[in-house]
Image: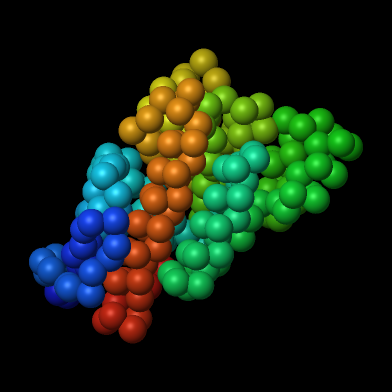
Length: 220
């Protein structure tokens, strides 16, 4: 049954979200990915950026339909991944959690090799069919990120790589992740990480619009 979902209009200047709700966007319960991609792109444009809608649509659909979502990355991307899990859990009511804390990353890296610092915790958490692994990496080629993508494929879980415009080349990624690209190159590290945060918050805004309080029930 088609519902009318109100999409936030984002005010300017300064990228401040206005209280206006316009325009209405027609969406049914099977079209949540397209709605989320629309909202995410509008959110990014409020900050002078944009996002590719088709990869975001695929990623959002997977996240919103997942049994569990695990997030991970390195350095600043690790912090963004933890932030994403917190926002998606709180706002979207999604079972989202970081793959590993900073303590776990260093512990697994020290004992098993850093390239396994994300994959081993994911496996030990029972990564399986129905789960989604969301990885943030400016280069898209960090050894532990590449290993996590491969492990997700073996576990028949979905992996999503959020990376730079030239990150995650086929020479580095051996699995089949959904790749969401920032409109910045891998040498623009700060810009990429800023965009990662915008993308995370754009999806959170979409989740807010799709929450039961707004007339949509997540029927997984």
